[in-house]
Image (cartoon, rainbow, N blue to C red; front, top):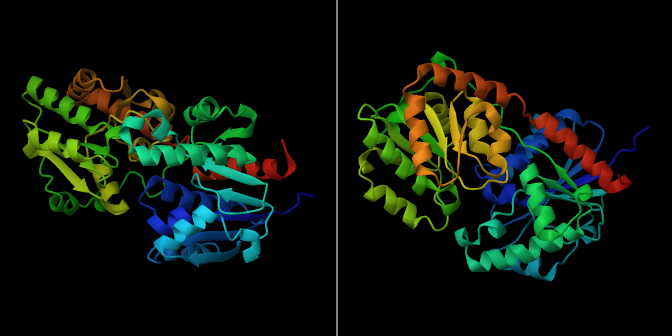
Length: 390
């Protein structure tokens, strides 16, 4: 008989930042996946937070999965005390009565604990791979902390084979300790029926023409400057191309040059930065766009291409890191930073309806290869390896 486990899930990122960042989305959907398939193990949701605006996301899970064995332990700390808690590494979870077989640190950081059976999720090492895209203090802090945590953990979950390779390379950690576990798009990202299409979402964002879509936080690693350059080249070379370019995402760090490039573009009037969107708005854009273009230089996993494919949107993407793992042969892959290559393929796709339809079908087929149920199964396996070895 398989022994039941008591598992602590550290969901601090979710209750501090919500679900519209990648790590928050990962935490929420993985928990849903775990509770959907696991009715034997006991779960404790833990987190330290500064304000309670996202706590409801955690408590809602209890209502959605009333058969699951779930309890909660959240501690509220002021921003200053939160820093003290992280620096002093006190009190450990066990002193707060939180003893468990496994602690899953779901977003790089490990809470103070005596537990040796730690499963650590590392989404990517972008801060080490592309230091020019981050601030010096951030790189120094996270490089030191994540390296230490990676060596402390019993098992590491990497969001892609690309990230698993980086962990081995940068931290000199053996591959047998790492599980590459792909993520998935939320079920809500799907092809909408005609009566579900809401054109008012476009009106609210000043989208008045057929449009190309890209999604992501406005920061250097997403390389929106190459995207806007490719868009300008495509418009210059094909007078019949009147599409708008819609870039959906919240403002991140070092974004000034990106917005400036948009303002200086010859086609600035047709380049739209939507800012942060709700999932409902984003799903509408995925369903109403003609083409998804993803110029990101690097991703640990990269939700947007998979979300786009789940909505049957044709994809042109950078052939790099995990992006090529996710998109595979379902989309058109272009060398990162190659504005000419992106421009050529934008023109080719928009002028070839048969190609667009073929890409739509390939997108849908590829999206079916990913599910949170599979992610949850592999994560459960990692828990058992942490406790029993293997």
